[in-house]
Image (tube, rainbow, N blue to C red):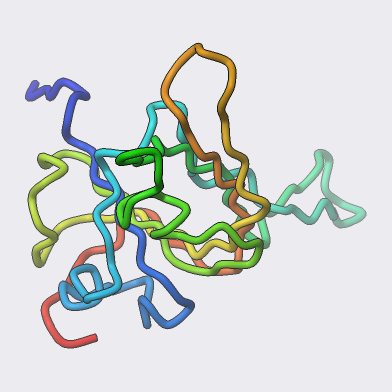
Length: 173
């Protein structure tokens, strides 16, 4: 059985805007590498968690069913993005997450996650990405505790579109 150690083989991309990915079922290399897209992998903290969650369900049965019938309906996803801050000479840099994603409530964009290749490897056709369209809730910053690096936590609000293991295709955005 082939195995891979979970070190350095997860890539996170931030792609701004609802239209950053036109079709989450078939993202393109051009969309994942567009000018606004940013590989944020080196700043993502291991406490980051974004994934599918339990679906909403309908619980209905006929008068002849002898057990409950539970059917999934609307899918859900949830999470938060935790990132190291980037400072130089006491000021946030262009690579600071509050600069990349923004520090305002309501920023919308896509988080794309790929597992299995080195984080620095550029997206390519046939790569598999988990894609989540999110809105950023109030960013939360740390500081003053002396117990670690400065970080920003971005609570993520689902915006109705996600796909696990979407296959990347060639083509324009």
